[in-house]
Length: 176
Image (cartoon, rainbow, N blue to C red; front, side, top):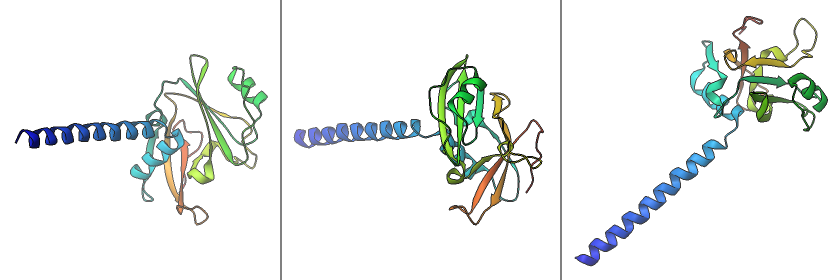
């Protein structure tokens, strides 16, 4: 009987360790998820083709920030330094990419490039306005980075749709 109890207790300990390792791995995987992936996961759950939804970008970041710059493709390292006022020794923004630069207390705390076509995310002010390309980066404070989101069908995308993010500041009006 004692042997059976000891065997059971050993299995229980082993299971606790395995369960603990499982939760640890899940936590690590969640921590390494990109901001763009977190945005996409949230929008997939909350938005529909029928209605606009609202999205607060600060809910997709796991860090503190006070300012966000969004640079479109081909912005150089010099332009990024000049715009942010912080020395940037990185690379030019790649073809088809957007670069998110998060700043807290005048220090870069997170940088992320993502392919807007691959991630199905499009910050609307980055696109052509009144026939001219958007040549300036977008700047948002943490409190301003709230968007009206329109889910749009697109046969050219793998998922068959994408998300258009319109700033709530009123510079662009959402269109279906």
